[in-house]
Amino acid sequence: MLETKFKVVFLVVVLAMASLPVIGILRGTSLPPIDPTLPQSPTLPQSAEPAAPTKDAPLAEDMVAIPAGPFIRGTMVGGYDEQPERSIYTDAFSIDRYEVTQHHYQAFVAATGHRKAAPPSRYARNVSRMGGVNQPATYVSWEDADAYCRWAGKRLPTEAEWEKAMRGTDGRLWPWGNEPDSMASNRAVANDGYEVTAPVGSFRRDVSPFGVADGAGNVMEWVADWYAEDAYRDPIDRNPLGPDHGVYRVMRGGGYTTSGSDVRVTSRSKMVPDFRDETIGFRCAVSGGGEGSKGAGKS
Image (cartoon, rainbow, N blue to C red; front, side):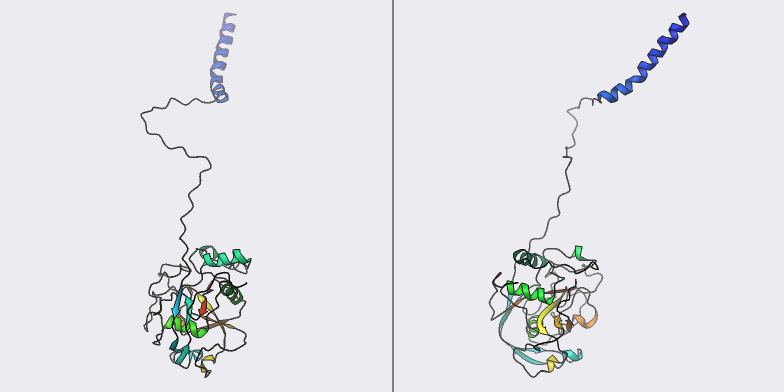
């Protein structure tokens, strides 16, 4: 009998001891007192997120005045459509120092409801890396570029104006002179520091004698003219405007994917006006050397 009672008491003690961890879980765990002499870690809110990266301040719009007078257009060392080389006269005009940036194009979209500078399909691989406020606006058709310039109280430069602004008056083949330099502009060079478009004005050598930036690199640029292979053979030598109709619009300048002699500022490219691509942007001009008035036109 005594042995049986002892077994019962022993079993009760064992069950009581086994229940202590369960009771602790149900009641919660009390932390030991904090020693006030020890350094304490700061307490972060549960919803804390990493701070957003600092964005570049948008560059202000800036135009460069190009004086009236002659310049050497074309070259005999280029393709058939760059010939002949001869003197062409332009009236005074002003042209954007930089290609139109994402920041300024987005302001146009917000003000007018015009479609965004975005790829027409999902084939684009680099669009997420090309949206910096000071990177050039891309994925714009000729019509998009024309609409922006009119909204800004400006216009697209003529092909002759673009070449004069980028080349100066001495017949040089690149903005920096007559010697090719693969590192002087944002083109298809693996170690130039940029895999895609660079913020405008990043390449200090890619600046014309007039101070206009990025003529040999970054993005190709729409200009006003229709393309004709023999346009430079037209006898008009004062403010030429190109043909009055066509299939393709002219693009000038090199882009970040350009290689070979195509970065020469005399080179002429062409594309259908509704084409949009990550390698194509634009800049604006005004006649007479004055500056445009943003919002003066309609999209």
